[in-house]
Image (tube, rainbow, N blue to C red; front, side, top):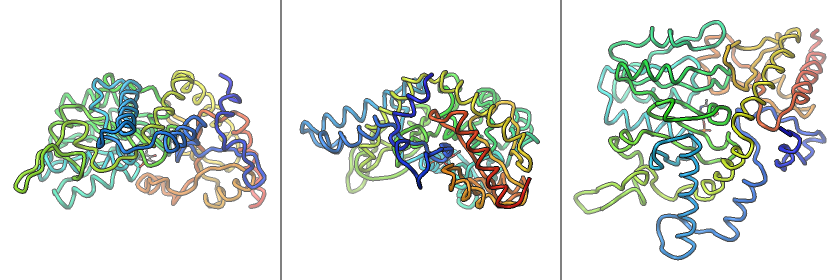
Length: 406
Ligand SMILES: Cc1ncc(COP(=O)(O)O)c(C=O)c1O
């Protein structure tokens, strides 16, 4: 794979950022966008714009077809059985809220339990937390082991006769641990437990196959997949999406509206109320084509090499402590440097043009468990190279000098 050529497809790398070449190591937060995606948004607004699913004029019909084409592309990309199992949302956060809210209304009973993990992003905890009050639901936490992993055994240990839902991340945005979703789902289904997966970090970095994973729901964040912001995808098995109530009410999601009764539209309209992120959906088709042009197997291999290289570099660097050491790890390198606050690390690295993230990464439960208020996180994407990780390491060394550390 020619990464230099791939990198050239991202216009941001032609820019000088504070007089530096950009070393972008914040893709777990949001990825940069290839020109094809940026151009597609521009082209749609310039030459093809219309709202979708409403009017019958030429532009409206053409835009609706483009919008629906993306649904089919997503379906194929994640190997879902049916295109109506693909629902567009404004992000993975909304997708997870949709699932928690509708399962909360129709499926959960008072006293039921939900099993999540200590690795979860707030987007996969707070929506379930709402049900504690409204439904008297209990939330249990599967705990990480010393390598920052969640094992199948730990999940099995935490399942009780009251567990109705297991909601887990595919790939941790802090430790990089990849969870055994297929095995967890098999175990859960043998006990009639619904499986919800936060696939925000899984979708941009792993090969996805919904029929093989067999989970009931899978939430995707398009802006982490070289796609536009303001867009997410909820995959849900048809039987669930048909059975559950709508999440939001408004135009587009209804069948018939009378003064005394309302019936709802078929899938996927039932879950797509109001004007959707039309341009983003249409441009997301280009993100998928971009990913397919690289080949997911190539992407996975490239990122695995980067992580291994980065991990070795940082392990050798005095005072740097990597968070977690999972056997099966995605493209995330979180770390602390003894005596330097992660925000200072990120600020000083930024002066060298190295963009990382610092904070709790929306994972306060995990940081509490690790007894640290925050961490620094470097995360990779398809455009990164080993040289980027060398620059990260050099910038960390510069930072240590500022604080008189060896
Ligand atoms: C693991 C994880 N879950 C959920 C989210 C939220 O995704 P979105 O920005 O699409 O709402 C993120 C984004 O940071 C994430 O990393």
